[in-house]
Length: 235
Length: 368
Image (cartoon, rainbow over the protein chains, first blue to last red):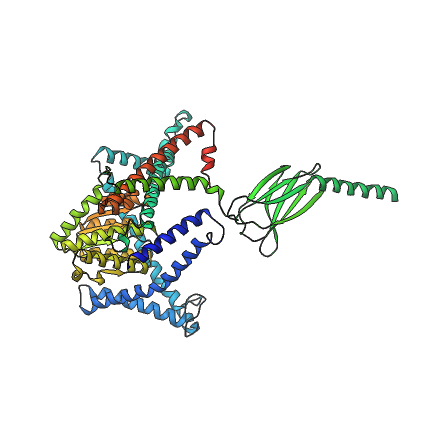
């Protein structure tokens, strides 16, 4: 019963969504949108589970004095501070239980910034940007490994990458700009454009088409109850 | 003088009548659609050389949506709301004499019971689904099909074994998509198999998730896998936990886990975006065996260079069927192959027809 009911619900909902794609009339047409709204409502409630999991996980680490427990304490304090300032003084135009906190907002800067927005803009955004900027360094190290010539394929990859990189910068234009019009097809920016437009697009589309086929097969298996692993597996 | 004025007035009136009689503007409902399109047809009379079509915005102000000098034609307005009346003004005028005719029309777009434009999509879907079902039932009847080896999935066993030998945990990241993302569902189906094996080998598995919905599902999946393996006592709910909804906060959290706990095997399976390389490179630096998989084509190069094994696109969705070794599920994979053959045939025929100047096939699949 624990599996049968979810499987019946999955089948009915799956069929309704498929029908709604081809039957725009009520009641079928708006079903997909309604289900999306239901999902958002359920997701809103489950956030409590997430928060409880976060507090529990960090508390266990702090209580057991696990290695680097200070980080978990810092995480928990940061979480608590953000929640409290949001609840007390609100964020942006919305007010908190203590109002808009005009005094503290004025004290935090000009123009007045609410404590939540202040922490968000001056801490959170910068921390996120720091993580994102790590990509620049990781791309360099990953590219180095990828371009080491070990096989025919990696050789091909390196040559293509060099053409693309040169073609996408002014260096490529300078290097091949002097070529006569009859040899314009050898201009690096042109070759780079050609590679991006044809071989690259073709490969990407092939992956996308095969992924779409995978989605159809996977969805059918789930709707028909052949695939049950997402319910915890077993037959 | 009075006569001249009278004749001039009559001539003006006659001109207006002629213009009005030969000028037409019709608004029609787009047939067999979802009520989001209207067809605007016009014909302007002799003496007029330009046309402007205006549409009323929600406040009732008329805004120009089309300008032309064509004397007749039609356009499709696809910016209308189903079952809500749209009002239009057609202003046909002469640029040099300033003569003009204004026609007002309104129409409520109707929602039909069947969207005719999607017929090719329906036929393709039925054909593909039919073939997948055929192969599933053929497998059920005992027919055996050849399924090519997927090395990334075969290596899972090895990765779990290595983690067990080293006494280090396995890290499983189900992507950054929520539960409404099919890649996340595919990822959870793989997690089920992986957790089952981990339970059998008594290996520790860590599953940090980004969304609470995924947390609930992942916990259920891991718990059931441990019960199936007869190791319910070994299941630890605190090893499947929520980190944060924020994309880079989530990445920072996982990076921290990789550096602190030094997992022997990392699995990045699901929907990934800009964080893919940050995760994979950090994992690479810790020396873990890494298996990744996503259907987001633009992230695949990052995974391929930084991971030992990568499931490309379709392989992510085929993984659960492949790992289960269940005949019915394996049969469905054969249906995917039929889909590929169909796509290749359509692409080849389409390319030949396009080069020959025949466009009906591409038009048929143009759902815009």
